[in-house]
Length: 188
Ligand code: GRF
Image (tube, rainbow, N blue to C red; front, side, top):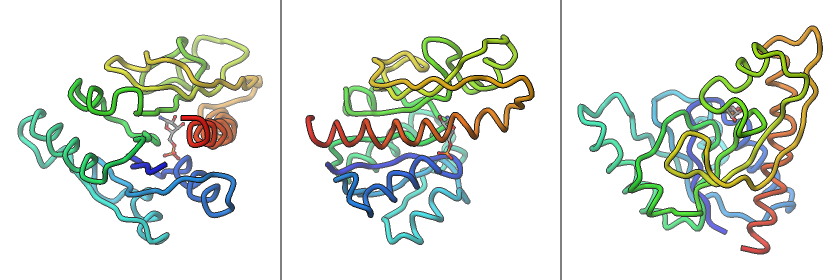
C-alpha cells in the first residue's frame, strides 16, 4: 500500500507509521510526506528518514483554488493507494476528496461526532465530559464528518490540562492509526 502523508506540525502520528513500517508491523510504503507550510518538524523528520518530501505552501497562493490544484496535483503525482492526514490542519476541496474518495484517512483527537473541528481536545475539556478519545475516519467534504473506521476511549482526569490530555489521546491515536492502516493494507 503506497501512501502519501500530509502534515502541518510535528507529525508524531507519522512517526508511528514510519516506525511500524520499519519494524515490519505495517506493510506500507510512504511514497512522500507533504506539508502546507515551511519548517514543519514532520517534513524535517521524514527527510531525515530518507522519505521524499514536498511543501505546497498555503501562503504562497493568492487564490485558494490554485493551492488546491497544486496540492491535488502533487499528491496525485505519487500515485498513492491511500492519503493520510497526520495533523494536516487544512480542509481540502471536493475535487481532492473526489479524486481520493474513500482513500483519504484522517484522525481526530476526540470521539466523533462529538467535538469536531480544530480544538477537539480543548472543547471536550471545556464541556466537562469525563471520557473522550481518538477517532480514525475516512475524510469526506465536511469537517470531521466522514465514516468512522475505529475509535478508542480516553478518561479525562480531574487535573488534566489540554496538553496532558492531548498527550494521552495521542498515544491511543497512534496505536489506533497503525492498527487501522494494517487492516486496510491487508484487507483493502
Ligand atoms: C493529532 O492529535 C491530530 O488528530 C490533531 O493534531 C495532532 C497531530 O499531531 N489534528 P502530530 O502532528 O501527528 O504530532
